[in-house]
Amino acid sequence: MTRAAARPTLIPGTLAAHEAGVVPATIRKWVQLGYLRPAGKSGRMLMFRLEDVFAAERAARRRPAAP
Image 1 (cartoon, one colour):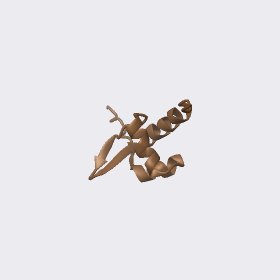
Image 2 (image 1 turned 30 degrees about the vertical axis):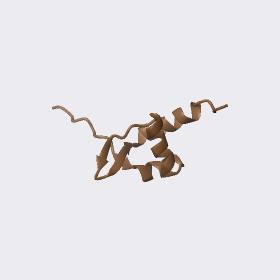
Image 3 (image 1 turned 90 degrees about the horizontal axis):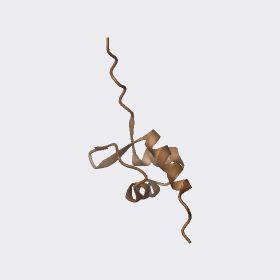
């Protein structure tokens, strides 16, 4: 008996922003800067894995401040 791997739940950018405590523009900026990659699309909406959003948040906080 094999067990199928559970598919991660995907959430839209607005919900991802809410969960990370940032505004939706920050999610779009993380995508632009390469901290976060969409895991899929639903229509025109980008969808993200929640664990990827939290990883991007940590990566963005570690980034050194611009001079």
